[in-house]
Image 1: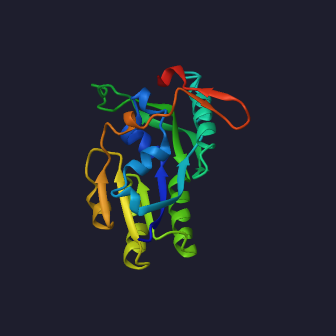
Image 2: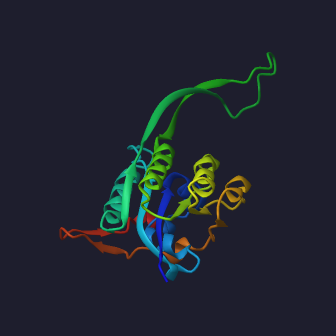
Image 3: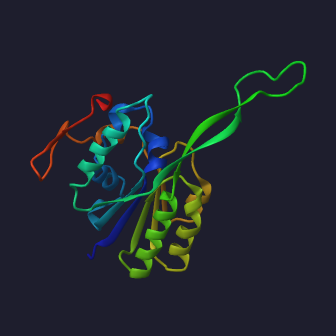
Length: 219
């Protein structure tokens, strides 16, 4: 039996906020084991690449170790031959938002203030572009997206119905995304306990002789 040539496209931001946030022990994720564990009948697949789309967080005095811990994690992922890290970026800007307070009783106006807001840029575009480029190159016949972002419905629909290739979606969120499910060959919400079963070792040796330890905050 000829195996399916399979590529994963992982929306790091969506994975983090849908499944990993506020669960420190799950952030030290063995991404390859995690991804391949999702496949039905893994023996039928030849996973040729796992493309991880993320952005490096900026230094935040409220959590000074966060950026350093992420850098260590990305260094570890870089040792996996099949994992390709494709980076977007974070943009910070000031925006005027209402305070979480009662409106003024005399004028019935809500008090506003300037706050900093940080948003991830380009990762979703990078993912969609990379996936469509792989379709054009015929780099695989099975395309797997780990995300619950409905914006990927359009490219997935094209890949399945126009390119006639197989698409799978694994949603990190608990709620079913009907639009993603409608346009894919196979859809599943990721089991909430899977990350705890797919952790990296506490100490990871790098090819250059360095060793990287699991961050204490992620233990």
